[in-house]
Length: 180
Picture 1: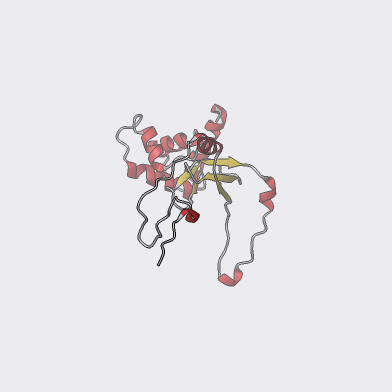
Picture 2: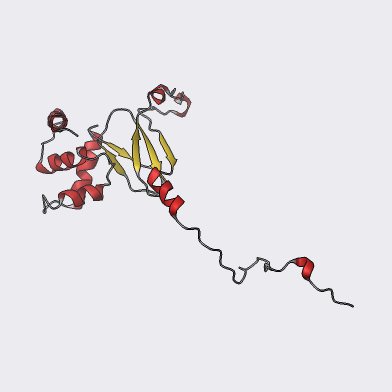
């Protein structure tokens, strides 16, 4: 992200904190600056690892709390998908994600047609929809490339597992018949 854009985002942090009666602490500023530099949707632990060298006294718990506050303030979004740690996204405008099921990488995708997805009528459930997220799950280019270059594992022949029939490698027509 460019220096000018980062400066605007930090000013947005300051303004939003003031509007909500929150102090702009060193910890909030450092965590926010760390995340707006990312395009790879870091976890809280990745943000903590990144900033602990600059601020050795900061705790992991503080990073988690600051990230939750930034989400509540609408300055970043939290991305959750099954089987993975929560990740954080500095892009707050509507966009979508490609989620790799192999390496858990998340890739942003802009697709204006998805902005017109009709929101279902859920009034009968007593539910109010505020937002929606679309995640396309599959395999990223790097993992596909790795899968193509990975040699296939040879099948080992061994004892059958419980309940399995023993497989014979001989041709059944070659069996000699026993005479009665």
